[in-house]
Image 1: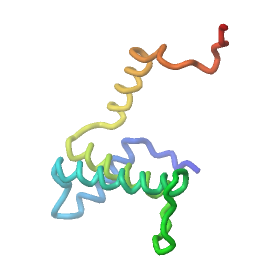
Image 2: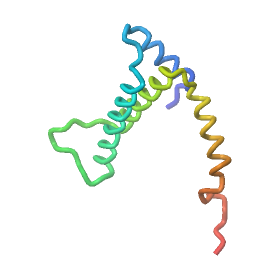
Image 3: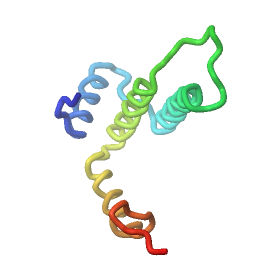
Length: 114
């Protein structure tokens, strides 16, 4: 299911939400701590579903989707707090992958030559 939101839409939506609070965005160091915390929660969920460390019966279930959403929210907050356009950041990274790393991986459409 897609709602047709662009990254700019997501960044604006988060900014509207955060802007209603006097505290505003956290500092970059606090944001990094939140990002690390959310990444740890995602790691725990992935390990629960795909790894060797199942949860205890007393622990609550969280979906990987929810944890990825939490991580995305914090990334957007971090970018917004530093006035970074995530669409531009994404374009920069994709250009890097399509130039510097263009021959790094075996493409599906390449026939193996043995």
